[in-house]
Amino acid sequence: MTAYQIYGINGPVITVRGETGLQMMETVYVGNARLIGEVIGLQQDKTTIQVYEETAGLKVGEPVYATGSAMSVTLGPGLLGNIFDGIQRPLPALEKQFGAFIGRGAKFSPLDTEKTYDVHLCIKVGDRLSGGDVYATCPETAAVEHKVMLAPNLSGTVSEVLPDGAYHVQDTVARLQTDDGKEIDLTLMQTWPIRTPRPTRKRLPADRPLITGQRVIDTVFPVAKGGAAAIPGGFGTGKTMTQHQLAKWCDADIIIYVGCGERGNEMTQVLSEFSELTDPRTGKSLLDRTVLIANTSNMPVAAREASIYTGITLAEYYRDMGYHTALMADSTSRWAEALREISGRLEEMPADEGFPAYLPSRLSEFYERAGRTETLNGSEGSVTLIGAVSPQGSDFSEPVTQNTKRFTRCFWALDKSLAYARHYPAINWTLSYSEYTNELTNWYRDNVSPQFSSDRDELCALLQEENTLMEIVKLIGADVLPDDQKLVIEIARVIRVGFLQQNAFHAEDTYVPLEKQYKMMHVILHLYHRAREVVARQIPISVLLQTGIFEQLVKMKYDVPNDKTEMLDDYIRDIDAAVDGILR
Image (cartoon, rainbow, N blue to C red):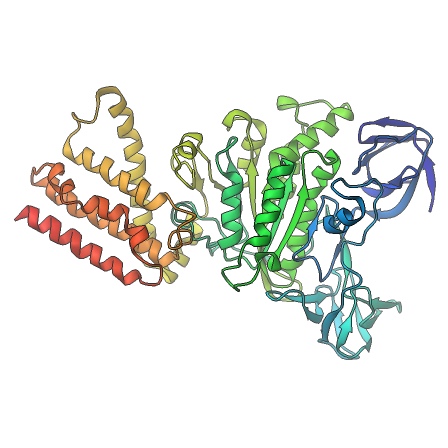
């Protein structure tokens, strides 16, 4: 392994003088402790390297070793249920050796090489294989079958197949003869560079939603499978809580949770809660289909920058098996701060608020890796990206939030005032939007109701009208408003409290199926239409309020079980009886 000498050290940034022959983005080992680094700058007489570990104690003159390969992750059975740092070192194994803090230069296999898997070979001698083809399967966890695929850059003819049985991840299970005559051993694992998107056959349209069971998301601001959504919000507005709820209840097959630069105690809470959560789909632990990547704020800053690429590569790997994956990045603001810190040490020209000028392109590189695709083996899979953004002081005009809006089509703006009022999820319905609603119209029509989209539009229009009316109320009070406008305010209150607000700790309200969401929305709008008849007869709206029907609708989310949505038809009859009684 070729060695060079350290010339300069500036935090995590190392320089090497002279002609090195290193390649851009090549992985290197730095110093006698062999810290992991990556080449990020090349000049004729100088090479710049960023180190993914703590550089304290490094000295000028220590060696730098070339590897000849790019920064990569190891892919294979054993990823699910595991916890990694930003450069895919398994934290449970590190804890056993070093305790609470990670030692420098630690080398561990990301996958458990001692564990055996019950492998079934899907190929025979003479079969022609190309990149992405599945040649073996094994149960990775109780919830997920792992499909072992040929690396995308390989193809050839199967020359030998071993019998089914128990194998370690590094054991040879078959042999492939490539077109140029090389013999390649096929194991259960492969590597892939984290900054290179895994290839697919073609992208598919974003025409089906990611069902989350959260009414404000599924009904009002839906995200498509293979879409990208941003959750911006200040401190304490519930970004992490919202992502936890989505991770538990969304209909993705695989969850990748990246804790990028968050506080250590918050990540500890995430790890402990995820291990205790029961998967509603299988009844077993949610960790059986989850990968956690923890890179806390006190870990090396360069590894934070790499963590989201590690996460998205794992998500793409399971997508290529034909699974629908969802990646939760919490938070991309901390990742952008890592970019800013490294950029400052490189003495690059700063742009807005000190962030590097290439911040938008880096964000686009990340979010554009989302998508619903036809994979190389002909199956369908998707990667849905949900990135939390932490703007300082809840200022959505800062660069990370504004640039994230450019590359995501779904924007769930968390509101501090809603969060402090205990309105969960604290998604502000006037600042938020989803550009997927038009593409999803046909799916909602065919799978929920032909009226779904028109009802949703009317619901949003009422919330928008209420927002305008409340500006007037602040100036002159509600008493002077005509009854038709008072009705809008009352109906909007039912929508806000009875529909948009959701109780994560209530058995019936923590997850709500789409059928119940639609019927609840339909009942509220039915009350609005019938109440307009009362107002049109010059009857005060207070008469209808006295019947208690409005409060009855606010509580229906608790009173109607998710598996008995036909009970919502009773509310229609109660509304008709109350209105008809007043009109008579």
